[in-house]
Image (cartoon, rainbow, N blue to C red; front, side, top):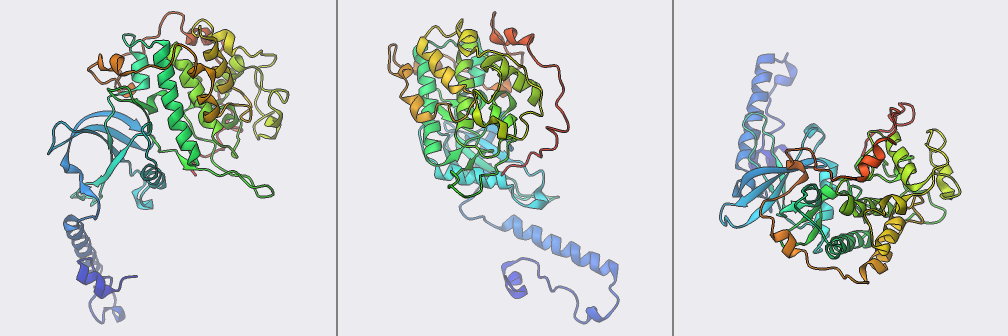
Length: 420
């Protein structure tokens, strides 16, 4: 720990700045207040002149337009002031609880992004910070990423963007390559959804937004299971095990999201749009069948199983419901395996990449021609009108099946949304 002399020499306010002998006298509150103001002023001057190593000032980039909001930060499109042709995405780390220090979620995201380097994972260029705020002296931190022109949700929302089967195969193959790389490096994304899948103008798919990500491990035999939070993954893409309270989970939670995205490539909108945890489980049962121990042997061990009233006698209808959209039999098969209720039976990324869907005609094709035709960026955040659902969209088929039951406070609300 630095001594007061070291603090003074570095420019920081000294902790021993009270007048000599004042400890034996009654402290004058006015004098004390003046000393506090002086210390704050010294600290502010120190921060204003301090050069953070390996961390450039964010003013090197010109902020252009807000393009999204990540899990724990807002994202803007930026431009390098020295090279106007170089565009970047700048994510400001939100400091809602700055008194508690730098957010652990942002630290985790930063650590993971610095470790991961893959063509299908968004690239972190650098970390920048701002000058201290003149009144609060708060320093803002920014993560600077490569700029991707679109996100998948924005593209799917535009009826003018049409994907062939070859191109859908390319999107899913690249997505699975990125997911395989994550899982091979023992990383869970925990927020796989179409708006977190970025697309460059050359047609390269990038997995983004690692605000909920974390490293995972497989518990050894005889040791206690993992106790991760189950309040992760956006509701429409959240797998049934998390909705039922599972905390000892692994890569299969991401694969459910991959299945939802794959179906979305044809339906053009999320296939299960619940408004609560219970309604989401109801939609899952209506599509994938009733959750029972016959189809999912370990489900009875989950805390909320048996406490929530779910639809009974529902048959599995994944292939039947999606058949009007998926004419390719291999597409139906891989999607059916991605949307398995039992996470142990759900297909993993390695097996998915070797599925016949990717190795039969028509083969995956380049996306660059299709994507380059659209000059304006398309992001889910920037949609100014209601998403243009197409006639016969699967969402309409579910509208009559959506649960009207509000989430139970005894079963759901007691779980705090802590990220660990």
